[in-house]
Length: 299
Image 1: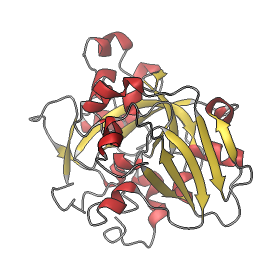
Image 2 (image 1 turned 180 degrees about the horizontal axis):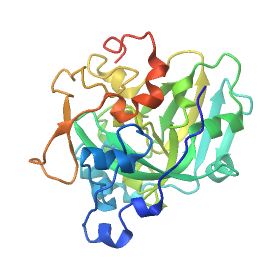
Image 3 (image 1 turned 90 degrees about the horizontal axis):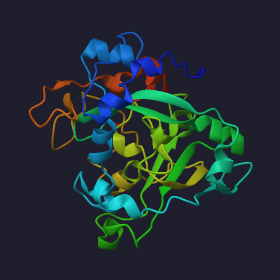
Image 4 (image 1 turned 30 degrees about the horizontal axis):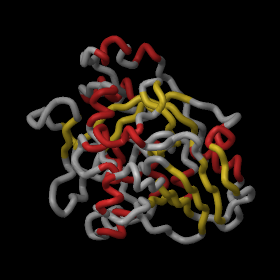
């Protein structure tokens, strides 16, 4: 049985605002036996928390371009208010929910998570948001639901990547229901105590810290409960390279590069690489979800 995530971090564990505004950094992280406590882990692994500037200037958001700097340059016109999320499928209370109404009454927390991209870079990020499980419980998970599907907004007038059709849109993702209900799975609405920057997925995005970053769909406008495994954008584009589960597994290489090591953003191309952790370091909390599964086949 999953237990509610317990936060043992405080603002004292996070880089002060004045320091990250000056591009200075402190060491913080999590301990070897507690992947949920990112402060102790980062100290054990000699990780450095990333500044807001680094987090918001190095992004994958193909709707705004394929270069890592394109989202920061191009996402200023994203319309984020008003914002409505359609909740449908196998759900007790379907409907089109204003974002404020969907989140009303739910506990908002800061979660300092380690974030790992399939391109072998990582970051340490303090997210603000609510547990996805709380949202799903609020709308009511219907009997027989086994998966949760997500869809990103499409705003062609302000999204140059949509107009150039760099990939099929809308962007879609999905989780198995037990993954979605896990207390680590977050619907994030902010970062560094600030509202979510447009290029990072404003006004609400998914964060699943034991999976590669492309599973963390941005700017969500639809959540669907279903009994069938939903399509996901990258799996649909190239199933050989991007599996449905997409758990961080250093033993399964991407066909074009190794996943055995990674570099943290902000240190440049010649930054010291570090070993990749199974499930991104959250194995104590999530490995049981995959008992009996071949994690090479179900990548």
